[in-house]
Length: 227
Image 1 (spheres, rainbow, N blue to C red):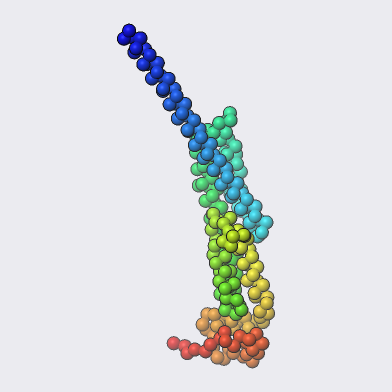
Image 2: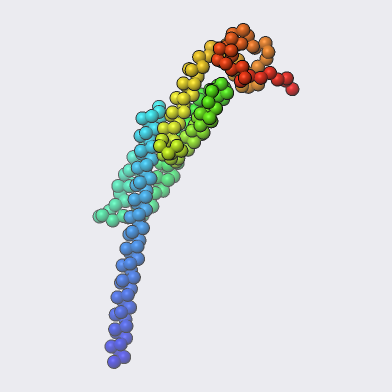
């Protein structure tokens, strides 16, 4: 009798163990599937941003990053084996994408942004005080600054356009502002001097005075003593 009772208990324990292992395997599989989906979505998002940046602006990535992207695609494809996510392959793909693909995209975009917007920032610093709408100038500065982060390019700060689109628009707006002011080399040089606080009374020529009056900018300029 005792042996029969022990045998039944052992059998129940084995059955419970099988059920528990199956539950753990199912939980592990669900987590791997979820992690894989997240990685694929993030990778696709990066590809979408890259495509949009190339279309909107004169942006291109290095051959090293192209190679890393191609390797990332290959590794993501190899994660699925016999219809199941392979945990080791998943971890390898994640490390490659984070350390090489995303790191390179972030670094290269930051470098590109600095070079691309240097001229626009210089212009807005020089011409911003001449714009009739100071709020629009402030938005341009914010849009240019927000466009420096690769990870945030898909975000929308105005509820409609992405930061990438707002960056491109702001760069164009700066160029349009410059064209609308119709500045001669003499006037441009004078404004640069004023902006850098190096303008002298002797710099205020008849042409400068005429331009200030024609553009109704009398209240934009003040005279001060040099310390």
